[in-house]
Image 1 (cartoon, rainbow, N blue to C red):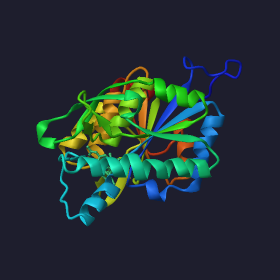
Image 2 (image 1 turned 45 degrees about the vertical axis):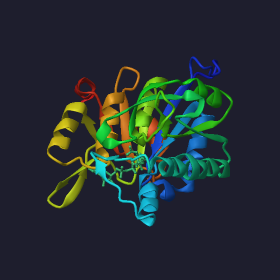
Image 3 (image 1 turned 30 degrees about the vertical axis):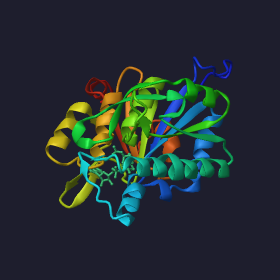
Length: 278
Ligand SMILES: Nc1ncnc2c1ncn2[C@@H]1O[C@H](COP(=O)(O)OP(=O)(O)O)[C@@H](O)[C@H]1O
Ligand SMILES: CC(=O)N[C@@H](CCC(=O)OP(=O)(O)O)C(=O)O
């Protein structure tokens, strides 16, 4: 996946690659991961980072003796909790990532769904409290930063039409960003891909389609934080987003392999595409 050498990238022909870094893996990502980001950028592919930070938020709530609950992988977020969520995601974690990219020799700008009114969101459902879903992404800020040589680092925290902050799941935010940029997505987590336990052994699926994913959720093979991940992935699949890959960010050259469509992690594609390639 490279851009033509004769045609310098403009906002019209840029090739974006959306990378979502889960909170489960952030602290364990090797320096090589950040160097590979720079490599992508130097090869004419614009990485756009979206991050989570669920474990860090849970850890802080535990210290504050505030109980947290999840429904299908989404954190029930009360009015009292939302500011803490925003501080952890848009403050601490966002800036940690920006610092790491700079240490690797790159340039990054940390923003959240609020900045430039990038995400338009609505509350998901009353029972989840201040949890939202993205209904529209204005890609202009991402484009401007990318054109200027920066890697955008996006915290998913956002707001509704009244300016009230909303907690958005990182995987769902990444899916919305990728749809808007017509980019492939790489969901970086702490597992080698989506697996099923067979005779006590975790067998990783090399590829999965939307139909099979539905079955795996129903039978309980896919649970917890993996649910918003695969739902976001399936929602993003389109002519412009042909596949989404879920992988372990600690694997050697994970990002480069994902971009080159080499065998790594689990690739999620639409059913008709699996039929064509298999
Ligand atoms: N079938 C599955 N294959 C792999 N992981 C799964 C599966 N079902 C549920 N999970 C869980 O999903 C977790 C990844 O989701 P999550 O904790 O939200 O990660 P992240 O913080 O990286 O977004 C894994 O650590 C694993 O416990
Ligand atoms: C609504 C909702 O669940 N928001 C997530 C946002 C962070 C996130 O998505 O973090 P991971 O990618 O590490 O799971 C949360 O509060 O945990």
